[in-house]
Image 1 (cartoon, rainbow, N blue to C red):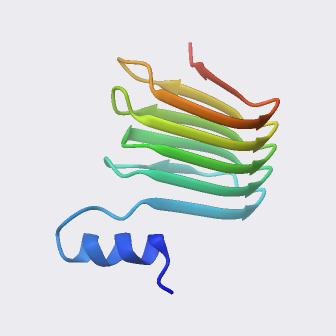
Image 2 (image 1 turned 60 degrees about the horizontal axis):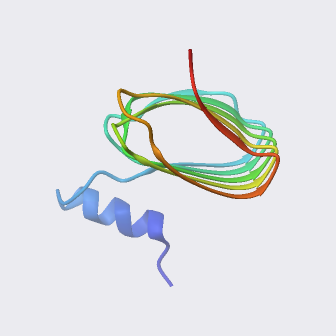
Length: 108
């Protein structure tokens, strides 16, 4: 079976779409430029910042902290426990949350 990330990469190489940014594992602390791509974060205890008009965010795991610049009205899906998302955009994202003690809020 081919993963969604691999399919997106193939589509991006064909000029149809840019591959999403996918970060997985434990304890990563990076700043990443989205350049209009979507973001997928899986894992635990990440402290991540995404800049540059990100198309979407899917956050899965436990105790992750994400600061993200979003395209206006971008979809944000948060699943897991103790997830914190702070977003910047001219229009609020479309938020779906599942889990316990998760928060999505506008950054000052």
